[in-house]
Length: 411
Image 1 (cartoon, rainbow, N blue to C red):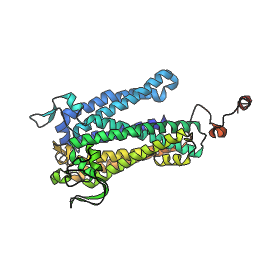
Image 2 (image 1 turned 180 degrees about the vertical axis):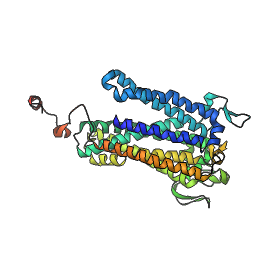
Image 3 (image 1 turned 60 degrees about the vertical axis):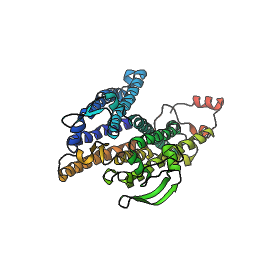
Image 4 (image 1 turned 90 degrees about the vertical axis):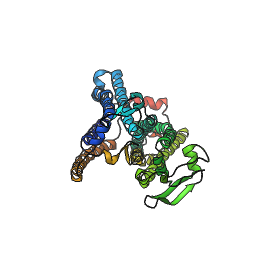
């Protein structure tokens, strides 16, 4: 609970940067899109944040005061609040990626004409599912990494076994679902943001029949080419269009001023995908060892889980870099450019506020991260006792041994 409380507080504080920058660095964007995005972000506070904050105290401090059922209900409400928060925030971001249900008033602002279409815009369902699954996986691998760390130090630690087992179940089930969700999200992106997909894939020329999958290469925006390509014929078309001879537009299909920076998008996408498949591989590996009864004995698995502990964070960051850099030069795709959205401020003013935020948040998050890591280093607490060397090896004590243990005086 202490770790959750610290991380929750750090997350709340991080939101101040966004609200601050809306009014300073992105005032034109706020003015143009405020009639749509303002209410959506307000709903996030009213329906999600208040729900989380209202039940958080009960969850953290009320277990011995309100009873187990109400405490469990409060925990569920905090979880529901985070899900509602993701719903509204991703609806806002998705509207910026695939705007819908809007009109333009006399003041040049984008105003809602159909709230249902604006909230459930074309990319929102895919983005929401993809992000929520990513959050679950990130949490699972942090918990699994911590559990594995303690299993390496004490394989009989009951609480560490529970942590690791639950995390690996989550990895085994959710990671394959994430791959499927990512495929659907990719098809939706190809339909609504094809330039982003072309940058992700490193394609410059139009491929009429059977676009290859470029595994690796060095995209060059100046020369409009991807050097040192390692590619698999037709596989790109099969993945992106689900057709062996599917066609794909290259970045040259769009004017230079409408293309995203290809190198950043190309590599951030590959980092995200590689980490996603690595997480799925670890989940499948754990499932295989579980069937063989060796989930808690394989030090190779435990060591790999420790190394993969931060993988979810890295994959999420790489995914958001792909999403946000890939939509450039647009803030609202096809409607409002990033250059048009910025406030009329001089660079020194923006730089000063940025440096101030970096210094303050480096101190806050540095201290918070250090404290969380220290808490993680302590053995997890459990209501039960350690399993013991005999049961760790799969040996169940007989009745005589159990009776003898019960007769021993308490220490």
